Length: 280
Image (cartoon, rainbow, N blue to C red; front, side, top):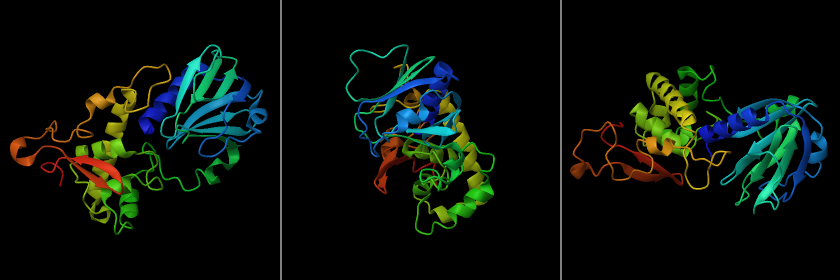
């Protein structure tokens, strides 16, 4: 699933290519995503001008001049293709084509776990999708005090799982949670409530560091994700621990023949990678 860096990469790409264009037409070829695309959506947005592009957590939000916002989530396998004209024929799994005065955007989603819908812009903060969304990792209100206060309520939750809870910090996914905790030198096995204020400060600093690096690298190309121009992100080449079971982590000086290298465990159904020697 595209995580925050991948979604930010897609958002920036369509913002640069399409900019403040006017929507000429939206064609729905298959409305059956995890939530059915509203049948009235094409008429709701036709003729509107794009005012702004935003990322909220792992969603792309496109604000329009008629007071409507498009809400876009890539799901497990969704991707956006940008072009000058609608291809003939369309590719398999092309669900939506958005024609604008500056080009087209095609939403392709083989596994159909994505979302494409709309909402009144003024109602976004209290909508069903965003009403319980936590602080963005880059929001200035994400402080050590805030984070510690949230973690203290997680009596039976490990820190790795807590970082994935979108009502605490919105946007951190499984890949980056492992990388953030490695950079922070904190074991994913630690109870969330045991994390000190100083450690929360470190987690926030390393969150910024890891996500900034990933965005600059165009995200991590794993499984189905590609950038809108078809090229691949390369942050996976910079992973310290994720998907590196048995290897030596970049900063470790331990004897790998004794430690066995980077460990892989499963927490709440998600794979976690970490270094037992460095992360305490």
